[in-house]
Amino acid sequence: MTALPLLSFSLLSLFAPKLSRSFGLERMIFIGLILLILGMVVRFMPVNALLFIGTILVGIGIALCNVLIPGFVKKTFPLRIGLFTSLYMTSMAVFATIASGVSVPLALNIGLGWNLSLFIWIAPAFLALILWLPQLKYKTKDHIKTVPTATKLWHSKLAWQVTAFMGLQSILFYSLITWLPELLMLNGFDATEAGFFLAWMQIFGIPATFIVPLIGARLYDQRKIVLTLGVLYATGFLGLTFFNGSLFATGLFIAFVGVAQGGAVSLSFLLLSLRTKTAQDAASLSGMSQAVGYLFATIGPIGFGLLLQSIQLPELTYMLCLILTIVLLLVGLLASRNKTI
Image 1 (tube, one colour):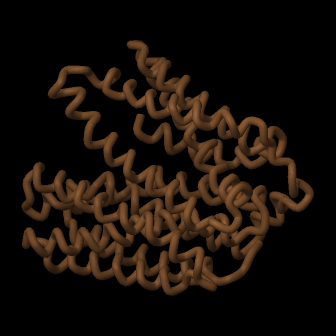
Image 2: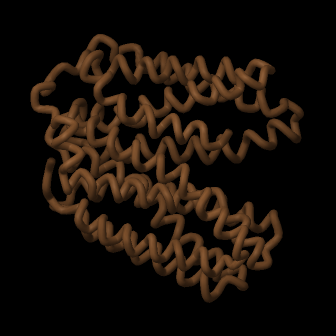
């Protein structure tokens, strides 16, 4: 069930740019919001089959919006890409943190049940739909002739470098979100402490999510940011490998990982706009990058889980994260050069 939204993201990411060229960025984002709301309604119904269908619709709706927003930002705010990427990514991080922290208490402590505790999030989705209505008077037809063909995009080294950066940060992000509590409990922490450290990591990621696009959009290239994030990630994973018994040290190194994680996520989205020339180019690169990225995000946690189940050594998992960080750093340095597709 948890893999369904990510698989939907991956598959729909390939088709979203083409749909936007036919119907416009604004209209397809609107359709994405409608599908998101429809999926939440269907998922609320007490039928198991509808739970799966609703979850798939939610995944499709989010995928359409996620893929097309970078193109919309580049088209609408070409001189303020950093600011609006920052606002978009930070709002996603904040509301995701709130929803994950509130939904379970609503379901268990207040007695709403899982379906009603998830259904209440239809309110912000409906508000987003209403706020988006004024955008429907626009339709992005510009630059359709300049959109890279699928062959050109999938054969571009720079496009693959950006895609690899998106995929690698997705593996680290979703694998840690899924397995960090289990890793910490193997290190001797109890479930409450492990849950706290997971929230701790996400909290430290939010400021980085906001700051990195603001700084990155002003720089000639983003290699210094990539290097900084790589050092933070590496320091965090090395610390968790060798100093994982102390409450203070664990909190410190998880904070490093959280900052690197938040910065890497927002930088991966910023690069979609900075490495392209037009809004539709950005949407096309976004579709390619997120299709691969979410596929990695689906496979990554499964692979980490199998490794952890078979070996039961959290230190080995942290070292695997360190290896992925080195690869992330290398492809990030290539993707962050001042070039466009």
